[in-house]
Structure formats: C-alpha cells, structure tokens
Image (cartoon, rainbow, N blue to C red; front, side):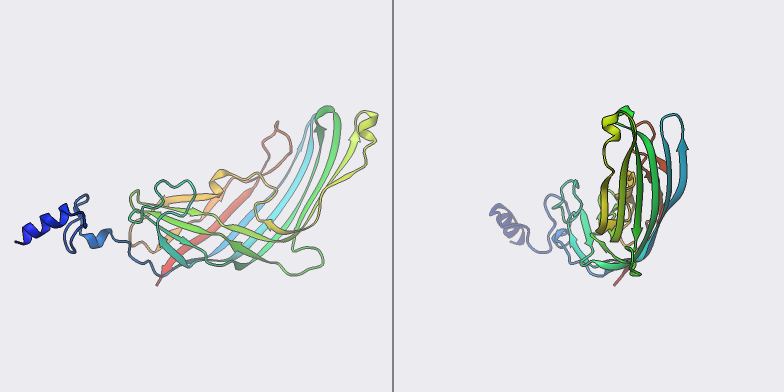
Length: 265
C-alpha cells in the first residue's frame, strides 16, 4: 500500500513526499531545499600603491611620484543563496552559489600624495603641452583622512569549488589638480591660455583613480571548500602611472592588497 501511495503521489504531480529522494538527483528532498546562511566574514585590510620614476627621450618627458595607502576593516554581514556577481551563470541556482555582501559602508583611513608632470605632443607632433598633476588626500586644510569602503561581495561556487571576491570601492575626499599649458608649436597653439582639466575637491576619489588599473584588481578568485573559514586575499597588482600616450605603457608601481577574511558565527 505505501508503494501504491507513492506512485499515485508522483503521477499526480504533487512533488516528492517528505523523506523520499528527489527523482532527478537521488538526494533527500531536505538537502535540495535552500537553508538559511548565518554568521559574518570579516578582515582588516591594508592597500599600498607606491612608486616613482621618469621618462626622457626625443618625444616626451614625464615624471611621477605615487604614494597611496588605505586601511580599515571589511565586514560581509548579509548572506543569501544564489549568485551576486554580474556575469555569473545561473545566478538563481541556490544549491550551487552562496553570496555575502557588505550591508553598510564602513569607515576607513586613506591617504594619497601623488604628483606628476608630462611634456609631449597632443594631437600633432608639433603641438606640445605641459601637464602638471597633483592628487592629495586628505583635502587641503583638513587633517581628516577618513573615507569609506563600500560594495564588497564574496561569492562561493560549490559546484566549481571556488570563491570570487569582487573588490569594493575605497574612497575619500581629495584635492585634485590637473593643469595644462600649451608650450610649443604653431602660433595658434601657443596663443591658447592654460586650462584646468580638473580642480577642487573630489568627494569620492578612489584609491585606484587616475591610474592604469589591471583587470585582476576587480575580481579575485581561488579554490574554496565547504566548511572553510579563512580566505587569503593578499595579492600584488601591476598598477601603472598613465603617461598619456599610447607609445609608452606607463610607469610601473608597487601595489599590494593585504587582506585575510575569516568566518565567525
């Protein structure tokens, strides 16, 4: 009689009786149900981007001096089943993915002391400009180096056995100064008055702004096993100072993120 009851139940389309195996997976029905995810992933971070150099040849002359640092804590305190990162296949697959996001922005300390110059052609080999750039955090007249970290995302793919960390935004209030002078060329070029390409205060200047940004900065991936409670995200990255010309790739910088996320709860 129990067997007949089961057959009739399945034929009727009412689903799988409690305690029986799912017909498509051979797993108990309880295991394919999404379970609540609890706890927190958190870790203290330090970001440093530093470097200086110069280029001088027949075409251009450039200098750069980069000194950036940000410190704080990342807290991923909101979790759900499914994918959260754009481009993830089958993001609604709650048995495959688990995602963690930062529920709020958190305070950080961020300092930027950059300067650079560029002498070289613009649009034509005969049109020579001279650019002066400075990016400074905290903003002038302020001792407040506070900023924010926002939009961190951590995603687990249990089918592939991997994690993906989508790097958050690290930003603060900074002074920006970018001035261009027209120093050599035809009379109409030399007659141009100097222009400010940017000036004033950028309220959300990011730690990676005004640099050549490597693609690997934005998403960090690695192996992950169910039950793992620590993820090492410490990496170095090939950031560069932009030389504003396609003929030279940019000035290499030493950049590092130091971060270990640990699960609690």
